[in-house]
Image (cartoon, rainbow, N blue to C red; front, side):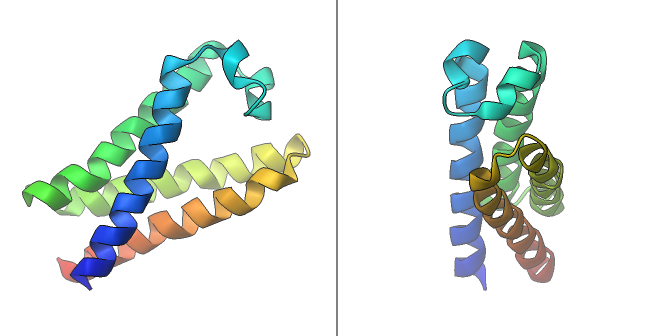
Amino acid sequence: MTIALWITAALLALAYLATGLMKVLRSRQQLEPQLRWVKDAASWQVKTIGVLEVLGAAGVLLPLATGIAPVLTAIAAFCLALIQVFAIPVHLRIHDRRAVPLNAFLLLLALAVAVLRLRTL
């Protein structure tokens, strides 16, 4: 169970760290070709989502690695799942259906991390 938790948590954190840093470090105009939804969002909204994703990635891994407040891993994973719950309707609204399978995968991965972490507490 611990190996499965580490693998899923690492995948989840890596995915969110990469996408979060991309949103934080690039301008909205640079992101538009890859992320269609940013056309309808303000720059501060894109940056805020990026910061939340980076913090979520840290929240998934750091408590797991340090053993300090281990329940925070589950809470961070649930928060990352919530990001996807809100992202899926946005992609459907702008007819960007190709993004939905990735959103669904990240949602399931985040829920798996949360459940696996809660089981090992």
